[in-house]
Image (cartoon, rainbow, N blue to C red; front, side):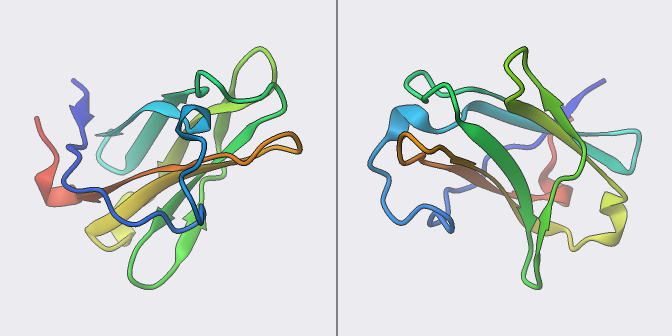
Length: 121
């Protein structure tokens, strides 16, 4: 059974100074905890994102950012998913953030605040 993180509130974007291209942001960001100590996230490429877009997922808590190290890619090599392990050692409240880069366009990012104790069954 997949447990989905409920979006509690939207926090200010950390990596994007202006949300000027909302269609370039990753779409349908969905994260879930599984096998006790793992969190997986998936997203779709934004509908107006340029072909060279590359997304990166970060876990941010009060102390630091951690970039996800285990990406899933689509047929064009773009990151569309990621998996964190060892999440039980991290603080229970965190922000999941996916930002992107492109040589052709500014890319908006997507973020959500979550609490491991607020995970829906």
